[in-house]
Image (cartoon, rainbow, N blue to C red; front, side, top):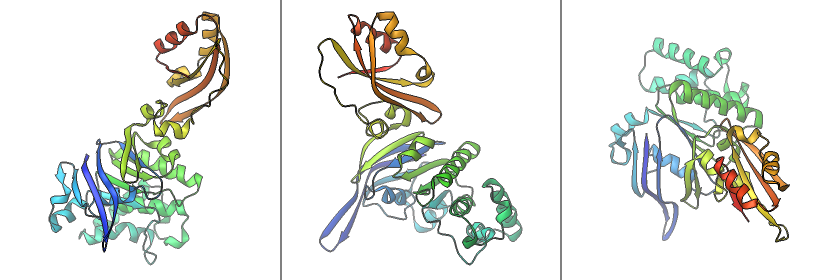
Length: 325
């Protein structure tokens, strides 16, 4: 769906240069929710605006559905953008228009007849759960409702790609969860590809299929969310599971971190291990996270006994990730 290759964006002010993006390459598969996460100033918003050419890249290429966006003429770019919806952090609604009027706006610009506009608006209102707010004005809506209007407006031209630029950053936790659930539903129901920019790891955890970590305009890592979180060396993993501190060394014991993925996270693995290999198992710390419907847990365990290495190989044979400190 999206192929970003060696993308760079440099802003120039006089003799000064600021590299917002530096040789970024990413592939966003069709039908997935792809998150780009990083702190403020990492280049996230610049990246998403380069996808629909609201910002023109300094170098590199952006292909959407096989179309090279950077090579399009003005009228070609306008047509291509119709298939790319975009939602914003602060909603960008027209205060003098009703909810229906805001959703209909892109259809009016596109010359769609009044009858067809009305039908499409009603369809979109139902899709985002705002059928009873058609005649309300933005000032009468909550933040979550405003963002639902923004999403409906972004879907007016039946896009295949939806760009989300910090769409939940201005919302409280309850509304954030509601909007993320709506985006996941739209992704599954419409087969919509979503490129989602965020600085919140909880957003990545809740709905993203894949994620890229951006820092100072460069991609630090990218991959499937579950794979990155289960890898202790990953930046994403360390955000959810901070590295364990070593305790005082004891020659007769072995310190290990064990990562559990899926149903085995709910099984009494350590209890069975202690009995099977005649070990003492002391749990120092750990936690379990629910990631995209799958449970991932990590335990810091001190093992004592004569068969510790045999026990660790047994755990690896069960598909667990085992690190020895």
